[in-house]
Every structure is written in C-alpha cells, then in structure tokens.
Image (cartoon, rainbow, N blue to C red; front, side, top):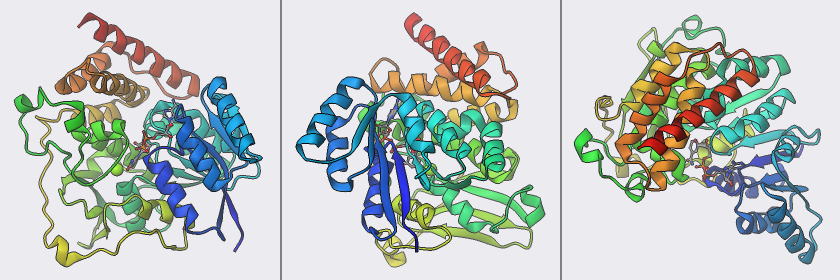
Length: 393
Ligand code: NAD
Ligand code: MG
C-alpha cells in the first residue's frame, strides 16, 4: 500500500477536523501535505503540531507571520503561506494525491477546481462549488481524469447505492429515482409564522448533526436540501424530477436509489461524517473510521414524510434555479450566502433568507454558464444585489 498525500482545504472546520481524525487513525496510509484555514490561526497551529504538514495556509499575511513564528519556536519545518493563490497551489501540487475540499461557500470554488484540473482524487464536501459551476466542474472532472468522490452524506450514500459506473444517465442502469433524505432540521413541523422569530442559536442547534454555522442554517431553511438536489443532478447525471426529497428525522438512512425491478437500495449508518470521509479517502477499499456501530434496536423506528415547501420555500427556489440553468444556481448560492451571513449577524430574520434569495433571483438575468469568468461575475453581482437589498431594509 502506497502512502497517500492529502491536502485538507478548510482543515479547522467541522469536516476538516473529522477528516484529520480519520487520517490520524491510519498513519501508514496517509500523510498530510497541506492544511488550510481562513482566520482561525490558533486552531490551525494545533493541527500543524499534530499532523506536521509540509505547508500551512491562512488568509492574511499577518496571520501567516504569526503562525510562522509559532511553528519556528516549535521547531517545525512547515512552510506558511497566505492568500487565495496559495490555496490553489496546495490543491494542485504535484506531490498531492488527494484533496479534501471542505472550505465553506464560494471561496472553495477555485482551489477545488484546481485540484480537479490537476487530476487529483477530490473529496467533495464543498457543495457550493459544484452548485455554482455544475457543467463546467463535471466537464473538468472528465477532461482531466480526476476521481470525484462525494462526501456530502446523502451523495456519498447514493454513490454507494449506484452501480460503480453510473455515468450516462440513471435510466441506462435501471435506476428510476434517487431518494434524497433530509432530517428536516431543527424546525421540522413548524409553521411559517412560527419561524419568523427564530434566533441563530436555535437555527444552528441541529437535532442529529454537528456542523459549521452556515450549513446548519441551510439545514434549518432546507436550502441545504435544495443545494443538495442540484449537487445530485450534477454528480449522478440526474434530472431534478428523478430526485425525491424524503424527510427522515432519524438521519439513519443517508439516501437511497430505486431501481426498475422494484428494489430500493439504501445506505445506513450513524450520523457521523467520518463514515463518508473514510469512504472517500480509502475508496474502493474500506477502513476504520472510528464510528460507532449502528444499533438498530436503539434506533427502533424509521419515519418518513414529505418536505413542507410552504414553510420552507428555499427547497423550491433551488429546484427552480436548477430548472432555469446557466448562472441561476450561482446566483441562488451567492444570495443565500449573503442572507445566511446577515441572519447569523442578527441583521435579517429567518424567513427573510428565502425572501432575499427570491428577490435577488428576480433581479438578476440568467446567462449561459460556459466559462468561469461568467460564473464568478454572476456570483459577484448577485452578492452586490443582495447587499443593496439588505441596506434598504
Ligand atoms: P466550517 O464552517 O466548520 O469550516 C469551514 C472551513 O473553511 C474552516 O476551516 C474555515 O477556516 C475555512 N474557510 C471559511 N471561509 C473561508 C474562506 N473565505 N477562504 C478560505 N477558507 C475558508 O464548515 P463545515 O461544516 O466543515 O462545512 C464545510 C463544507 O462542507 C461546506 O461546504 C458544507 O456545506 C459541506 N458539508 C459539511 C457537512 C458537515 O457535517 N459539517 C456535511 C456535508 C457537507
Ligand atoms: Mg448533506
């Protein structure tokens, strides 16, 4: 077994730390090449001391200088760099075999695409990158021979439930439907009126998963499921009408594939992201992820219900963006990022998130998303439109 060198983009986050937990269990298999973080320099220092990467990346030169001093004191040879260009370089470096893409939001797009274009094994947690650039991203995967492994638990589950060669449309392989499960988030069963006054802490208090704050809010609005619907269309060459969202509050079934002979294949497990992460790292092998064995007697029952798109309009907005195509998903994603940030900062109510996304969508044209410049411009202009709306409130 050869040693695999891994770059972890977004190492200090929820997915990043789970990734390093799995990597740390298998020192004979994996070595960390680079670790990156945005501003959390103390957390990155601790990870560097533990995993001794060749390179560490932070956003600002000031933070990088601080980390450089600390690492020198600890007599570690880690090279410390700053900025976006450095993120791209550690993603495409020739000594790297696999890249965990776990930056949150659009900021992850360029380094993730760089890893794809360098033909790496790409472990995709950063769903926003794929939502923004779907066709371009998947085209780059094929063209550069990258190995794309979905880490989002639902997509990882579907990946495990499909035949190993699933390209060319689901129908070719007898798959009739993908069943995308959703926990329903902390506000499952709430009415739209009740949602108006919920706080960021309530929204981030997810019943089953412990995650970063942005995806926690997305889970509460169901925008996360909308982004995942778009993500599934691209990953599995599926149409939106071939994907059914199934609310399953226990989060034990992580998603399913239905076949023309009536079979439905599901992937089950405890809600612990180390399972899909270990799958992505070791594929096609299996390794210990440190995850507790599933105890079906303790779970006892599995429930299913449809999603309430009246109380949670973001799911519908995402479906509409996918149908509109082109830059529409990038606009949806950008408006949502601004809205979630404003909600977390106490400047926008919870139901204002979907309203702002819809307003920005209505204000921005849909263009063909054939090149990266167009996508980045659509993202930037949607953000501007969202900030302008917020300022007028
Ligand atoms: P998080 O907020 O916990 O961590 C984000 C990481 O990205 C941190 O290391 C942070 O320093 C870095 N980062 C943030 N902004 C950055 C920027 N502008 N430039 C460079 N680095 C930046 O987020 P998370 O929960 O780990 O989620 C990461 C990604 O994985 C998201 O796209 C999310 O949708 C996806 N995901 C997460 C989970 C989960 O269980 N947490 C599950 C499925 C998918
Ligand atoms: Mg998910």
